[in-house]
Length: 222
Image (cartoon, rainbow, N blue to C red; front, side, top):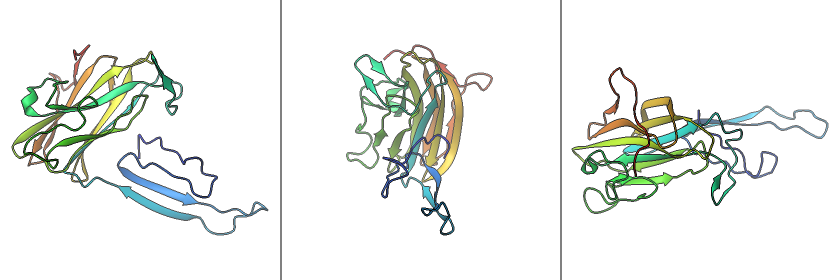
């Protein structure tokens, strides 16, 4: 699927490689067998794997940073990262639109908040946090809280000198893609408020300014 940079690990030349299907969508795997004489010994084998989420709400964030010469590397250390760091957020209405709310914003600093009825079912959870480029990051809600309008967004935490990024957010409801907003340009410190998600209707609406442009707040405080 678009946005997945997963590769076979350790490589596609070993007998039992692994592959991280980290983005929802359709994956096609093909196997070709060639003998010692370079002759293909049988027809290609092909299998299709469809990756979906059975949660009520699944939100994915991916991003591309043109200034990063190698977005697949993962080495980083103190005061350095090999890639840009963009973070996914989801607000409960009780956050009153304030990202980084200590209780009602689900993000890397609050990955398993307690919302709604006591217990995990109607709570969001941040399942992936990527700190060095491209993503994906994803948030999930098993059972949505009735009468709630969630707000999804992305914050450019640190560009680490790589410059602007082009962010994409996808919203799934019970495994069905409801909206994909691709290649929104954000700079270090920007907060992009992207979508409303109404429950239980499952309606997904883009958040826009006058003229239909994305709502981006520069140097958002946290």
